[in-house]
Amino acid sequence: MTAIDTPRPVRPGEELDLERLAPYLRDALGAPGDAAVSVQQFPGGHSNLTYLVTVGGDAYVLRRPPFGTQVKSAHDMEREHALLSRLAPVCERAPRPVHLCRDETILGAKFYLMERRQGVVVRRVPPRGVDFTPALARGLATAAADALADLHAIDIEATGLVELGHPDGYVRRQVEGWTKRYLAAKTDDIPAVEAVAAWLSGHMPTSGPPTLLHNDFKYDNLVLAPDDLTRITAILDWEMATVGDPLMDLGTALCYWVQADDPPELQAFAFGPTHAPGSFTRAEFAEHYARRTGRSLDAINFYYAFGLFKTAVVAQQIYLRFARGHTQDPRFAIMIEAVRVLASQAERASASRHL
Figure 1: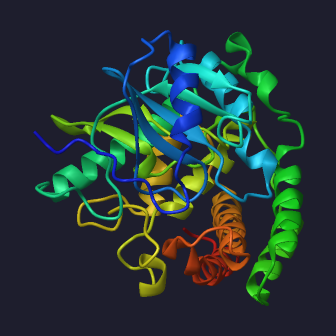
Figure 2: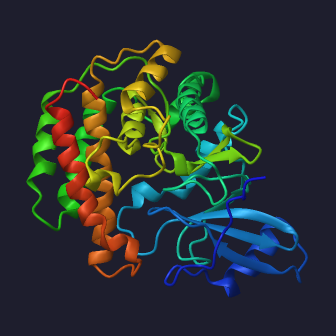
């Protein structure tokens, strides 16, 4: 059986105050007063922080905003908890929320607990001991495209999920909003970012019917069955989920989908082995999705370029936290290079007619 994704010791500067947290959790969860409480942290992730918390014999996943963040709207624990509360009953891949803490005196911010979904998570490289054959690469790529199509098929009206967003004018708000976020977080002069923002503003397509969007769909947010790595059992990190144009979600997925013929500097920022022999190219991923959903790919380069632009802005926001000394995490120091690389790729996408 392939190794289950496991937590590690908490990173320096991201420790939780156990003296306040432990008694709060025992009371909130109805655990005995002497129940042991321990905390570890899951690797990966540059935004909301994710911990494994054990209370007595029970294990939960705790989600809280990053320390020192200035972007409160991007780390709304109440909203994330509310979304999962509505989504989990109709989407078996969504973890079930367990408890929301609104009392910011406990950890300095709101946080919530959800069920732990154990399984295999594929990050930059396959887990040790996994023979990532061309057949496995193809099967996982197919499963990922299918999972995104399945997500976009959820009835947002019947579930009430439509209330979590404002789908009318979604594309325009996203282009304008992420442009403003970049300017607010800007540290270095990178002309490609603003050039892409201007291009996006002038090339916005007409959206089709809205769907639920994950907005961060990539391999390291997928939990795989240990006995079948082509079966996705859970989707994680719903902090940016909303409702809107589903092709915006596809564009975000494509921006993470590094392929074998991409420039080496882009491959250095891969979020998974999507470039492995046998895997889909970006075009194949999009075409498989289109066959499943019936949606047109006529404007796919806009959506791909936007996905790259948005991710560049996120990288810029992360780098700003490092530049201001809010985190010493060495992963954050290189985020300014990610901004440059992603913006350059977005420029290439805006000038091309093909993925």
